[in-house]
Length: 314
Length: 254
Image (cartoon, helix red, strand yellow):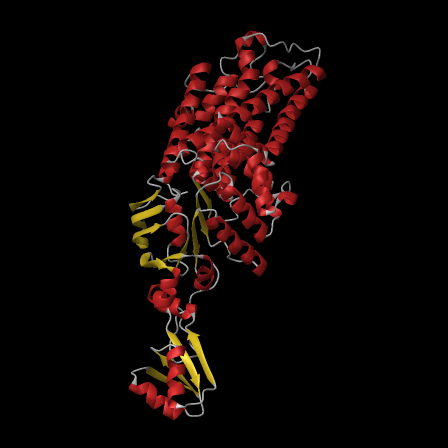
Protein backbone atom coordinates (compact mmCIF):
# COMPACT_ATOMS: atom_id res chain seq x y z
CA UNK A 1 0.00 0.00 0.00
CA UNK A 2 1.37 3.35 -1.08
CA UNK A 3 -0.30 6.43 0.32
CA UNK A 4 0.26 10.00 -0.78
CA UNK A 5 -1.21 12.72 1.40
CA UNK A 6 -1.16 16.31 0.24
CA UNK A 7 2.03 15.70 -1.70
CA UNK A 8 3.39 18.99 -3.05
CA UNK A 9 6.57 19.85 -4.94
CA UNK A 10 7.50 23.36 -5.93
CA UNK A 11 10.46 24.29 -8.14
CA UNK A 12 10.81 28.03 -7.83
CA UNK A 13 7.54 29.41 -9.15
CA UNK A 14 6.43 26.19 -10.82
CA UNK A 15 4.16 23.93 -8.86
CA UNK A 16 5.10 20.51 -10.25
CA UNK A 17 2.92 18.51 -7.87
CA UNK A 18 -0.01 20.24 -6.23
CA UNK A 19 -1.54 18.85 -3.05
CA UNK A 20 -1.78 15.33 -4.46
CA UNK A 21 -3.51 12.65 -2.40
CA UNK A 22 -4.13 9.11 -3.56
CA UNK A 23 -3.61 5.53 -2.49
CA UNK A 24 -2.29 2.51 -4.32
CA UNK A 25 -4.04 -0.64 -3.09
CA UNK A 26 -2.15 -3.80 -2.23
CA UNK A 27 -2.01 -6.69 -4.68
CA UNK A 28 -3.19 -4.85 -7.78
CA UNK A 29 -1.71 -3.07 -10.79
CA UNK A 30 -2.44 0.61 -10.42
CA UNK A 31 -1.81 2.85 -13.39
CA UNK A 32 -0.48 6.36 -12.86
CA UNK A 33 -1.77 8.27 -15.81
CA UNK A 34 -1.19 11.79 -17.00
CA UNK A 35 0.17 13.79 -19.89
CA UNK A 36 3.88 14.47 -20.07
CA UNK A 37 4.93 17.05 -17.54
CA UNK A 38 1.98 16.26 -15.29
CA UNK A 39 4.30 15.43 -12.39
CA UNK A 40 4.30 11.64 -12.53
CA UNK A 41 8.06 11.18 -12.31
CA UNK A 42 8.41 13.85 -9.63
CA UNK A 43 5.71 12.09 -7.59
CA UNK A 44 7.47 8.75 -7.96
CA UNK A 45 10.80 10.27 -6.94
CA UNK A 46 9.15 11.73 -3.84
CA UNK A 47 7.62 8.35 -2.96
CA UNK A 48 11.12 6.86 -3.23
CA UNK A 49 12.76 9.54 -1.10
CA UNK A 50 14.96 10.85 -3.91
CA UNK A 51 13.25 14.24 -3.94
CA UNK A 52 12.09 15.93 -0.78
CA UNK A 53 8.45 17.07 -0.96
CA UNK A 54 7.77 20.77 -0.38
CA UNK A 55 4.69 19.64 1.52
CA UNK A 56 2.75 16.51 2.41
CA UNK A 57 4.13 13.01 2.59
CA UNK A 58 4.26 9.67 0.82
CA UNK A 59 4.20 6.49 2.86
CA UNK A 60 4.86 2.90 1.85
CA UNK A 61 3.14 0.48 4.22
CA UNK A 62 2.96 3.34 6.69
CA UNK A 63 6.65 4.26 6.52
CA UNK A 64 8.63 6.88 4.67
CA UNK A 65 11.00 5.31 2.13
CA UNK A 66 13.99 6.81 3.93
CA UNK A 67 12.98 4.99 7.10
CA UNK A 68 12.82 1.56 5.49
CA UNK A 69 15.45 -0.92 6.60
CA UNK A 70 17.08 -2.51 3.54
CA UNK A 71 14.51 -0.87 1.26
CA UNK A 72 15.16 -3.10 -1.76
CA UNK A 73 13.47 -5.92 0.16
CA UNK A 74 10.27 -3.87 0.45
CA UNK A 75 10.18 -1.71 -2.66
CA UNK A 76 11.58 -2.29 -6.13
CA UNK A 77 11.70 0.58 -8.57
CA UNK A 78 12.55 1.21 -12.18
CA UNK A 79 12.52 4.95 -12.79
CA UNK A 80 15.04 5.11 -15.62
CA UNK A 81 16.68 2.17 -17.34
CA UNK A 82 19.80 4.26 -18.00
CA UNK A 83 20.75 4.58 -14.32
CA UNK A 84 23.66 2.20 -14.87
CA UNK A 85 27.36 2.86 -15.30
CA UNK A 86 28.00 2.07 -18.99
CA UNK A 87 31.30 0.32 -18.33
CA UNK A 88 29.94 -1.90 -15.60
CA UNK A 89 28.62 -5.32 -16.52
CA UNK A 90 24.98 -6.17 -15.91
CA UNK A 91 26.04 -8.68 -13.28
CA UNK A 92 28.38 -6.24 -11.51
CA UNK A 93 25.57 -3.67 -11.40
CA UNK A 94 23.23 -6.14 -9.73
CA UNK A 95 25.96 -7.48 -7.46
CA UNK A 96 26.65 -4.20 -5.72
CA UNK A 97 22.94 -3.56 -5.30
CA UNK A 98 22.39 -7.03 -3.83
CA UNK A 99 25.32 -6.57 -1.48
CA UNK A 100 24.02 -3.20 -0.24
CA UNK A 101 20.84 -4.84 1.09
CA UNK A 102 22.56 -8.03 2.22
CA UNK A 103 20.83 -10.11 -0.43
CA UNK A 104 22.44 -13.45 -1.31
CA UNK A 105 24.71 -13.37 -4.37
CA UNK A 106 22.72 -16.16 -6.03
CA UNK A 107 19.73 -13.82 -6.18
CA UNK A 108 21.61 -11.90 -8.89
CA UNK A 109 21.64 -14.94 -11.16
CA UNK A 110 18.00 -15.65 -10.34
CA UNK A 111 16.77 -12.23 -11.45
CA UNK A 112 18.99 -12.29 -14.53
CA UNK A 113 17.29 -15.58 -15.40
CA UNK A 114 13.81 -14.10 -14.76
CA UNK A 115 14.36 -11.23 -17.20
CA UNK A 116 16.28 -13.37 -19.68
CA UNK A 117 19.64 -11.58 -19.51
CA UNK A 118 21.75 -14.52 -18.31
CA UNK A 119 23.57 -14.80 -21.63
CA UNK A 120 24.73 -11.16 -21.62
CA UNK A 121 25.28 -10.79 -17.85
CA UNK A 122 29.03 -10.24 -18.28
CA UNK A 123 28.66 -7.65 -21.02
CA UNK A 124 29.00 -3.93 -20.32
CA UNK A 125 25.61 -2.34 -19.74
CA UNK A 126 26.50 0.65 -21.92
CA UNK A 127 26.19 -1.56 -24.98
CA UNK A 128 22.65 -2.68 -24.17
CA UNK A 129 19.67 -1.78 -26.33
CA UNK A 130 16.83 0.09 -24.66
CA UNK A 131 14.87 -3.15 -24.35
CA UNK A 132 17.79 -4.89 -22.66
CA UNK A 133 18.42 -1.91 -20.36
CA UNK A 134 14.76 -1.99 -19.42
CA UNK A 135 15.08 -5.68 -18.53
CA UNK A 136 18.16 -4.97 -16.46
CA UNK A 137 16.23 -2.25 -14.65
CA UNK A 138 13.43 -4.69 -13.91
CA UNK A 139 15.96 -7.26 -12.70
CA UNK A 140 17.29 -4.62 -10.30
CA UNK A 141 13.76 -3.85 -9.10
CA UNK A 142 13.12 -7.54 -8.43
CA UNK A 143 16.39 -8.18 -6.57
CA UNK A 144 14.97 -7.99 -3.07
CA UNK A 145 11.79 -9.88 -4.01
CA UNK A 146 9.77 -6.80 -2.96
CA UNK A 147 6.01 -6.69 -2.47
CA UNK A 148 5.76 -3.16 -3.84
CA UNK A 149 6.99 -2.24 -7.31
CA UNK A 150 7.16 1.14 -9.04
CA UNK A 151 7.77 1.55 -12.75
CA UNK A 152 8.03 4.90 -14.52
CA UNK A 153 6.97 4.72 -18.18
CA UNK A 154 8.34 1.20 -18.61
CA UNK A 155 7.18 0.76 -22.20
CA UNK A 156 8.41 4.13 -23.43
CA UNK A 157 10.46 3.72 -26.58
CA UNK A 158 10.17 -0.05 -26.65
CA UNK A 159 9.38 -2.08 -29.77
CA UNK A 160 6.11 -4.08 -29.85
CA UNK A 161 7.83 -7.21 -28.60
CA UNK A 162 9.31 -5.33 -25.67
CA UNK A 163 5.95 -3.73 -24.87
CA UNK A 164 4.22 -7.11 -24.88
CA UNK A 165 6.91 -8.56 -22.63
CA UNK A 166 6.56 -5.72 -20.10
CA UNK A 167 2.76 -5.98 -20.18
CA UNK A 168 2.84 -9.70 -19.48
CA UNK A 169 5.40 -9.11 -16.79
CA UNK A 170 3.19 -6.60 -14.97
CA UNK A 171 0.33 -9.08 -15.00
CA UNK A 172 2.57 -11.80 -13.67
CA UNK A 173 3.75 -9.57 -10.82
CA UNK A 174 0.16 -8.70 -9.90
CA UNK A 175 -0.85 -12.38 -10.12
CA UNK A 176 1.87 -13.07 -7.57
CA UNK A 177 -0.02 -10.68 -5.28
CA UNK A 178 2.40 -7.77 -5.50
CA UNK A 179 1.46 -4.11 -5.48
CA UNK A 180 2.43 -2.57 -8.81
CA UNK A 181 2.37 1.17 -9.45
CA UNK A 182 3.12 1.95 -13.07
CA UNK A 183 3.09 5.33 -14.77
CA UNK A 184 2.27 6.06 -18.38
CA UNK A 185 0.99 8.83 -20.61
CA UNK A 186 -0.84 6.26 -22.76
CA UNK A 187 -4.37 5.42 -21.62
CA UNK A 188 -4.68 2.58 -24.14
CA UNK A 189 -1.63 0.96 -22.59
CA UNK A 190 -2.96 1.42 -19.07
CA UNK A 191 -6.36 0.05 -20.04
CA UNK A 192 -4.60 -3.20 -20.90
CA UNK A 193 -2.32 -3.31 -17.89
CA UNK A 194 -3.89 -1.62 -14.90
CA UNK A 195 -6.90 -2.49 -12.76
CA UNK A 196 -6.88 0.80 -10.90
CA UNK A 197 -6.12 4.23 -12.26
CA UNK A 198 -4.78 7.36 -10.64
CA UNK A 199 -5.09 10.16 -13.18
CA UNK A 200 -3.28 13.46 -12.77
CA UNK A 201 -2.85 16.60 -14.82
CA UNK A 202 -0.62 19.56 -14.01
CA UNK A 203 0.26 18.03 -10.70
CA UNK A 204 -3.35 17.79 -9.55
CA UNK A 205 -5.46 14.68 -9.06
CA UNK A 206 -8.11 14.31 -11.74
CA UNK A 207 -9.57 10.99 -10.67
CA UNK A 208 -8.90 7.77 -8.85
CA UNK A 209 -11.09 4.82 -9.77
CA UNK A 210 -11.02 1.37 -11.29
CA UNK A 211 -9.91 1.33 -14.91
CA UNK A 212 -13.31 -0.02 -15.96
CA UNK A 213 -15.18 2.83 -14.29
CA UNK A 214 -12.80 5.38 -15.68
CA UNK A 215 -13.16 4.11 -19.22
CA UNK A 216 -16.95 3.79 -18.93
CA UNK A 217 -17.23 7.24 -17.46
CA UNK A 218 -14.85 8.80 -19.89
CA UNK A 219 -16.12 7.27 -23.08
CA UNK A 220 -19.58 7.59 -24.53
CA UNK A 221 -21.17 4.26 -25.50
CA UNK A 222 -23.25 4.47 -28.68
CA UNK A 223 -24.85 2.12 -31.21
CA UNK A 224 -24.55 2.55 -34.94
CA UNK A 225 -27.62 1.61 -36.98
CA UNK A 226 -27.86 1.17 -40.75
CA UNK A 227 -31.24 0.52 -42.31
CA UNK A 228 -33.12 1.20 -45.57
CA UNK A 229 -36.12 2.26 -43.41
CA UNK A 230 -34.26 4.69 -41.22
CA UNK A 231 -37.11 7.21 -41.13
CA UNK A 232 -39.48 4.71 -39.46
CA UNK A 233 -36.88 3.67 -36.93
CA UNK A 234 -35.98 7.26 -36.24
CA UNK A 235 -39.57 8.03 -35.28
CA UNK A 236 -39.86 4.99 -33.01
CA UNK A 237 -36.53 5.72 -31.27
CA UNK A 238 -37.45 9.34 -30.87
CA UNK A 239 -40.66 8.41 -29.05
CA UNK A 240 -38.59 6.35 -26.56
CA UNK A 241 -36.40 9.36 -25.83
CA UNK A 242 -33.12 8.08 -27.30
CA UNK A 243 -30.47 10.57 -28.37
CA UNK A 244 -30.02 10.45 -32.15
CA UNK A 245 -27.27 11.74 -34.35
CA UNK A 246 -26.76 11.35 -38.10
CA UNK A 247 -23.41 10.12 -39.29
CA UNK A 248 -23.53 9.97 -43.10
CA UNK A 249 -25.90 7.16 -44.07
CA UNK A 250 -26.00 5.87 -40.52
CA UNK A 251 -27.77 6.74 -37.36
CA UNK A 252 -25.83 6.88 -34.10
CA UNK A 253 -27.96 6.15 -31.05
CA UNK A 254 -26.93 6.82 -27.50
CA UNK A 255 -28.84 5.97 -24.34
CA UNK A 256 -30.04 2.54 -25.61
CA UNK A 257 -28.17 -0.68 -26.12
CA UNK A 258 -28.15 -3.03 -29.14
CA UNK A 259 -30.69 -5.45 -27.65
CA UNK A 260 -33.30 -2.73 -27.05
CA UNK A 261 -32.84 -1.23 -30.51
CA UNK A 262 -33.00 -4.68 -32.17
CA UNK A 263 -36.22 -5.60 -30.36
CA UNK A 264 -37.76 -2.26 -31.24
CA UNK A 265 -36.87 -2.73 -34.91
CA UNK A 266 -38.48 -6.20 -34.91
CA UNK A 267 -41.68 -4.83 -33.36
CA UNK A 268 -41.79 -2.07 -35.97
CA UNK A 269 -40.93 -4.50 -38.77
CA UNK A 270 -37.83 -2.51 -39.77
CA UNK A 271 -35.04 -4.21 -41.71
CA UNK A 272 -31.61 -3.65 -40.20
CA UNK A 273 -28.37 -3.79 -42.20
CA UNK A 274 -26.14 -3.01 -39.29
CA UNK A 275 -26.46 -2.79 -35.56
CA UNK A 276 -23.09 -2.34 -33.89
CA UNK A 277 -21.98 -0.99 -30.50
CA UNK A 278 -19.42 1.81 -30.71
CA UNK A 279 -16.83 2.75 -28.15
CA UNK A 280 -15.48 6.25 -27.91
CA UNK A 281 -11.73 6.33 -28.34
CA UNK A 282 -9.86 6.15 -25.08
CA UNK A 283 -7.38 8.69 -26.32
CA UNK A 284 -10.13 11.18 -27.05
CA UNK A 285 -11.63 10.69 -23.63
CA UNK A 286 -8.26 11.06 -21.99
CA UNK A 287 -7.56 14.25 -23.90
CA UNK A 288 -10.94 15.62 -22.90
CA UNK A 289 -10.25 14.92 -19.25
CA UNK A 290 -6.69 16.12 -19.13
CA UNK A 291 -6.84 18.58 -22.01
CA UNK A 292 -7.00 21.62 -19.77
CA UNK A 293 -4.09 20.37 -17.80
CA UNK A 294 -1.59 19.71 -20.56
CA UNK A 295 1.42 21.81 -19.81
CA UNK A 296 2.38 22.78 -23.33
CA UNK A 297 -0.45 23.41 -25.76
CA UNK A 298 0.15 23.24 -29.46
CA UNK A 299 -1.96 25.28 -31.81
CA UNK A 300 -2.37 23.71 -35.20
CA UNK A 301 -2.28 26.50 -37.72
CA UNK A 302 -3.71 24.64 -40.71
CA UNK A 303 -7.12 23.95 -39.13
CA UNK A 304 -9.81 26.37 -38.05
CA UNK A 305 -10.00 25.15 -34.49
CA UNK A 306 -7.00 25.05 -32.21
CA UNK A 307 -6.33 21.53 -31.03
CA UNK A 308 -4.70 20.29 -27.90
CA UNK A 309 -2.05 17.70 -28.42
CA UNK A 310 -0.38 15.40 -26.00
CA UNK A 311 3.24 15.42 -27.10
CA UNK A 312 4.49 11.96 -27.97
CA UNK A 313 7.46 10.41 -26.24
CA UNK A 314 8.98 11.48 -23.01
CA UNK B 1 31.34 -2.79 6.61
CA UNK B 2 28.76 -3.89 4.06
CA UNK B 3 28.71 -0.44 2.52
CA UNK B 4 32.51 -0.35 2.28
CA UNK B 5 32.33 -3.61 0.34
CA UNK B 6 29.59 -2.15 -1.87
CA UNK B 7 31.65 0.92 -2.69
CA UNK B 8 34.73 -1.22 -3.31
CA UNK B 9 32.71 -3.31 -5.79
CA UNK B 10 31.43 -0.18 -7.50
CA UNK B 11 34.86 1.43 -7.72
CA UNK B 12 36.67 -1.57 -9.14
CA UNK B 13 33.98 -2.57 -11.61
CA UNK B 14 34.79 0.58 -13.60
CA UNK B 15 38.00 1.44 -15.43
CA UNK B 16 38.99 4.90 -14.21
CA UNK B 17 40.58 3.83 -10.87
CA UNK B 18 42.84 1.37 -12.69
CA UNK B 19 43.89 3.96 -15.25
CA UNK B 20 44.47 6.65 -12.68
CA UNK B 21 46.51 4.30 -10.47
CA UNK B 22 48.67 3.31 -13.43
CA UNK B 23 49.19 6.94 -14.47
CA UNK B 24 50.01 8.08 -10.94
CA UNK B 25 52.57 5.30 -10.55
CA UNK B 26 54.11 5.97 -13.94
CA UNK B 27 54.47 9.72 -13.34
CA UNK B 28 55.89 9.57 -9.81
CA UNK B 29 58.21 6.65 -10.40
CA UNK B 30 59.24 8.19 -13.70
CA UNK B 31 60.22 11.38 -11.90
CA UNK B 32 62.13 9.36 -9.31
CA UNK B 33 64.06 7.68 -12.10
CA UNK B 34 64.68 11.01 -13.82
CA UNK B 35 65.99 12.61 -10.63
CA UNK B 36 68.33 9.78 -9.79
CA UNK B 37 69.43 9.35 -13.40
CA UNK B 38 70.46 12.99 -13.69
CA UNK B 39 72.03 13.32 -10.24
CA UNK B 40 75.83 13.64 -10.07
CA UNK B 41 78.61 14.26 -7.62
CA UNK B 42 77.86 17.99 -7.49
CA UNK B 43 74.20 17.41 -6.54
CA UNK B 44 74.00 13.94 -5.08
CA UNK B 45 70.76 11.99 -4.80
CA UNK B 46 68.95 11.95 -1.46
CA UNK B 47 65.73 10.55 -0.03
CA UNK B 48 63.75 13.80 -0.39
CA UNK B 49 64.76 14.15 -4.00
CA UNK B 50 63.27 10.71 -4.86
CA UNK B 51 59.83 12.19 -4.13
CA UNK B 52 60.10 15.04 -6.60
CA UNK B 53 57.08 13.80 -8.57
CA UNK B 54 54.68 13.43 -5.66
CA UNK B 55 52.68 16.57 -6.45
CA UNK B 56 52.01 15.31 -9.98
CA UNK B 57 50.76 11.99 -8.62
CA UNK B 58 48.63 13.98 -6.18
CA UNK B 59 46.83 15.66 -9.07
CA UNK B 60 46.09 12.30 -10.72
CA UNK B 61 44.82 10.82 -7.46
CA UNK B 62 42.47 13.78 -6.95
CA UNK B 63 41.16 13.33 -10.48
CA UNK B 64 40.52 9.65 -9.68
CA UNK B 65 38.70 10.56 -6.45
CA UNK B 66 36.60 13.26 -8.11
CA UNK B 67 35.66 10.89 -10.95
CA UNK B 68 34.61 8.19 -8.49
CA UNK B 69 31.75 10.40 -7.33
CA UNK B 70 31.01 12.62 -10.34
CA UNK B 71 30.51 9.63 -12.66
CA UNK B 72 27.83 8.49 -10.23
CA UNK B 73 26.04 11.77 -10.80
CA UNK B 74 26.68 11.67 -14.54
CA UNK B 75 25.18 8.21 -14.98
CA UNK B 76 22.61 8.69 -12.20
CA UNK B 77 23.91 5.62 -10.39
CA UNK B 78 23.92 7.94 -7.37
CA UNK B 79 20.12 7.63 -7.47
CA UNK B 80 20.35 3.84 -7.62
CA UNK B 81 22.72 4.12 -4.65
CA UNK B 82 20.33 6.31 -2.66
CA UNK B 83 17.47 3.90 -3.47
CA UNK B 84 19.49 1.01 -2.10
CA UNK B 85 20.88 3.03 0.83
CA UNK B 86 18.51 5.92 1.67
CA UNK B 87 20.82 7.07 4.46
CA UNK B 88 22.88 9.38 2.28
CA UNK B 89 25.57 10.40 4.78
CA UNK B 90 26.43 6.75 5.43
CA UNK B 91 26.53 5.92 1.73
CA UNK B 92 28.73 8.92 0.92
CA UNK B 93 31.03 8.33 3.91
CA UNK B 94 31.53 4.73 2.78
CA UNK B 95 32.44 5.91 -0.69
CA UNK B 96 34.83 8.54 0.70
CA UNK B 97 36.49 5.95 2.92
CA UNK B 98 37.04 3.49 0.07
CA UNK B 99 38.41 6.17 -2.25
CA UNK B 100 40.68 7.55 0.49
CA UNK B 101 42.04 4.09 1.32
CA UNK B 102 42.78 3.46 -2.36
CA UNK B 103 44.43 6.89 -2.64
CA UNK B 104 46.54 6.11 0.44
CA UNK B 105 47.68 2.78 -1.01
CA UNK B 106 48.46 4.39 -4.35
CA UNK B 107 50.42 7.08 -2.49
CA UNK B 108 52.56 4.53 -0.67
CA UNK B 109 53.16 2.60 -3.89
CA UNK B 110 54.18 5.81 -5.66
CA UNK B 111 56.46 6.92 -2.82
CA UNK B 112 58.22 3.63 -2.20
CA UNK B 113 58.27 2.92 -5.94
CA UNK B 114 60.08 6.22 -6.58
CA UNK B 115 62.44 5.55 -3.72
CA UNK B 116 63.03 1.96 -4.89
CA UNK B 117 63.82 2.87 -8.46
CA UNK B 118 66.23 5.56 -7.27
CA UNK B 119 67.99 2.99 -5.14
CA UNK B 120 68.25 0.70 -8.16
CA UNK B 121 69.63 3.43 -10.40
CA UNK B 122 71.93 5.09 -7.84
CA UNK B 123 72.93 2.30 -5.49
CA UNK B 124 75.94 4.37 -4.41
CA UNK B 125 73.83 7.25 -3.03
CA UNK B 126 72.80 7.42 0.64
CA UNK B 127 69.12 6.57 0.34
CA UNK B 128 68.55 5.03 3.75
CA UNK B 129 65.29 6.20 5.34
CA UNK B 130 66.61 7.04 8.77
CA UNK B 131 65.33 10.33 10.09
CA UNK B 132 61.78 11.47 10.89
CA UNK B 133 62.08 13.93 8.04
CA UNK B 134 62.97 11.16 5.60
CA UNK B 135 60.12 8.97 6.82
CA UNK B 136 57.63 11.79 6.35
CA UNK B 137 59.02 12.57 2.90
CA UNK B 138 58.39 9.00 1.70
CA UNK B 139 55.70 7.31 3.82
CA UNK B 140 53.87 10.59 4.31
CA UNK B 141 52.86 10.72 0.64
CA UNK B 142 50.13 8.11 1.22
CA UNK B 143 48.61 10.16 4.04
CA UNK B 144 48.56 13.32 1.93
CA UNK B 145 47.02 11.47 -1.02
CA UNK B 146 44.31 9.95 1.19
CA UNK B 147 43.34 13.32 2.69
CA UNK B 148 43.47 15.04 -0.72
CA UNK B 149 41.12 12.30 -2.04
CA UNK B 150 38.62 13.20 0.69
CA UNK B 151 38.72 16.83 -0.47
CA UNK B 152 38.28 15.74 -4.09
CA UNK B 153 35.26 13.57 -3.23
CA UNK B 154 33.73 16.46 -1.28
CA UNK B 155 34.21 18.84 -4.19
CA UNK B 156 32.81 16.17 -6.53
CA UNK B 157 29.65 15.86 -4.42
CA UNK B 158 29.18 19.62 -4.41
CA UNK B 159 29.91 20.26 -8.10
CA UNK B 160 28.53 16.95 -9.50
CA UNK B 161 30.03 17.49 -12.97
CA UNK B 162 33.33 15.73 -13.72
CA UNK B 163 34.80 18.54 -15.80
CA UNK B 164 33.77 21.25 -13.35
CA UNK B 165 35.03 19.42 -10.27
CA UNK B 166 38.36 18.47 -11.85
CA UNK B 167 38.90 21.97 -13.24
CA UNK B 168 38.20 23.48 -9.83
CA UNK B 169 40.61 21.10 -8.08
CA UNK B 170 43.41 21.52 -10.62
CA UNK B 171 43.11 25.28 -10.86
CA UNK B 172 43.06 25.64 -7.09
CA UNK B 173 45.98 23.35 -6.31
CA UNK B 174 48.19 24.36 -9.24
CA UNK B 175 47.39 28.02 -9.69
CA UNK B 176 45.43 29.70 -6.93
CA UNK B 177 47.63 28.72 -3.98
CA UNK B 178 50.77 29.75 -5.85
CA UNK B 179 49.33 32.99 -7.22
CA UNK B 180 48.22 34.14 -3.77
CA UNK B 181 51.89 34.80 -2.95
CA UNK B 182 51.91 37.51 -5.64
CA UNK B 183 49.55 39.68 -3.61
CA UNK B 184 51.76 42.37 -2.06
CA UNK B 185 52.54 42.09 1.66
CA UNK B 186 49.65 39.91 2.82
CA UNK B 187 49.91 37.34 -0.03
CA UNK B 188 52.79 35.31 1.43
CA UNK B 189 51.14 35.49 4.87
CA UNK B 190 47.89 34.02 3.53
CA UNK B 191 49.83 31.42 1.59
CA UNK B 192 51.34 30.10 4.82
CA UNK B 193 47.87 29.01 5.91
CA UNK B 194 46.49 27.52 2.67
CA UNK B 195 45.62 23.81 2.91
CA UNK B 196 47.73 22.33 0.13
CA UNK B 197 50.73 24.37 1.22
CA UNK B 198 50.16 22.82 4.65
CA UNK B 199 50.14 19.33 3.13
CA UNK B 200 53.41 20.16 1.40
CA UNK B 201 54.81 21.32 4.73
CA UNK B 202 54.13 17.86 6.13
CA UNK B 203 56.20 16.23 3.37
CA UNK B 204 58.99 18.79 3.01
CA UNK B 205 58.89 20.82 6.22
CA UNK B 206 61.47 20.68 9.02
CA UNK B 207 64.12 19.57 6.58
CA UNK B 208 66.90 17.65 8.20
CA UNK B 209 69.83 19.70 6.94
CA UNK B 210 72.39 17.30 8.33
CA UNK B 211 71.44 14.69 5.73
CA UNK B 212 71.55 16.90 2.64
CA UNK B 213 72.04 20.39 1.31
CA UNK B 214 68.74 22.25 1.49
CA UNK B 215 68.67 23.11 -2.22
CA UNK B 216 68.33 19.51 -3.26
CA UNK B 217 65.00 17.77 -3.35
CA UNK B 218 61.69 19.60 -3.23
CA UNK B 219 61.99 23.09 -1.71
CA UNK B 220 60.64 23.13 1.86
CA UNK B 221 57.24 24.74 2.24
CA UNK B 222 56.80 28.10 3.95
CA UNK B 223 53.90 27.13 6.16
CA UNK B 224 52.47 28.47 9.36
CA UNK B 225 52.79 25.17 11.25
CA UNK B 226 55.26 22.35 11.82
CA UNK B 227 54.88 19.11 9.85
CA UNK B 228 52.40 17.15 12.00
CA UNK B 229 50.18 20.08 12.99
CA UNK B 230 50.21 21.02 9.29
CA UNK B 231 48.90 17.55 8.40
CA UNK B 232 46.16 17.90 11.04
CA UNK B 233 45.28 21.30 9.60
CA UNK B 234 45.05 19.76 6.12
CA UNK B 235 42.89 16.92 7.46
CA UNK B 236 40.61 19.37 9.25
CA UNK B 237 40.16 21.27 6.00
CA UNK B 238 39.20 17.98 4.28
CA UNK B 239 36.68 17.21 7.04
CA UNK B 240 35.09 20.63 6.66
CA UNK B 241 34.74 20.19 2.88
CA UNK B 242 33.27 16.71 3.35
CA UNK B 243 30.78 17.83 6.00
CA UNK B 244 29.56 20.68 3.78
CA UNK B 245 29.27 18.24 0.84
CA UNK B 246 27.34 15.61 2.78
CA UNK B 247 25.01 18.15 4.37
CA UNK B 248 24.29 19.54 0.91
CA UNK B 249 23.72 16.09 -0.60
CA UNK B 250 21.36 15.20 2.23
CA UNK B 251 19.15 18.21 1.60
CA UNK B 252 19.36 18.28 -2.18
CA UNK B 253 17.08 16.34 -4.53
CA UNK B 254 19.01 13.41 -5.94
